[in-house]
Image 1: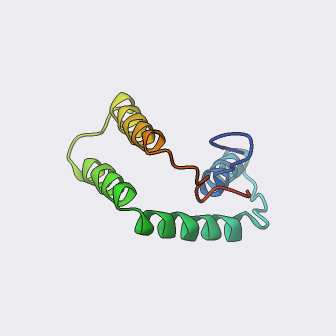
Image 2 (image 1 turned 135 degrees about the horizontal axis):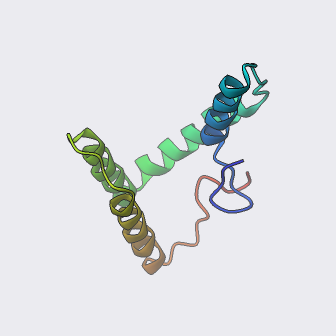
Image 3 (image 1 turned 135 degrees about the vertical axis):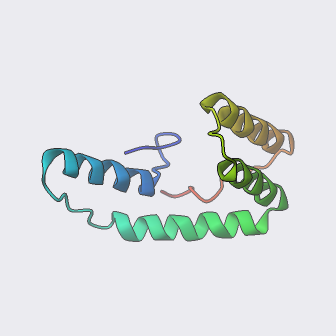
Length: 102
C-alpha cells in the first residue's frame, strides 16, 4: 500500500491502485475497510489543516497551482513539499500528525 513511511498508509491511494488493478484485470476487487479508513483519514487531514494556518496556506498554494492552465511539474511540486516540510521541522513540531496510529 502507498505510504509516506512504513507506518503510514495513504488509504485513498491504496483504493485508487486497487481500482486501477481491478480495471486492468477485468475484475472488481473488494476494498473492505479501506473506504471507511480513507474517509477517517481524510477527516483527520481536513481537521489538521484547518487547525494549522501554515498548512492551510500551503494547501491553498497547491490548489491555486492546480487551478492554473499549466500543469505543475513534479519538480515544482516536490520543491513546494520540501519547503513546507523544512519549515515544519525548523519549528520543531513533535506532533506526528494525522497519520499517527495507522
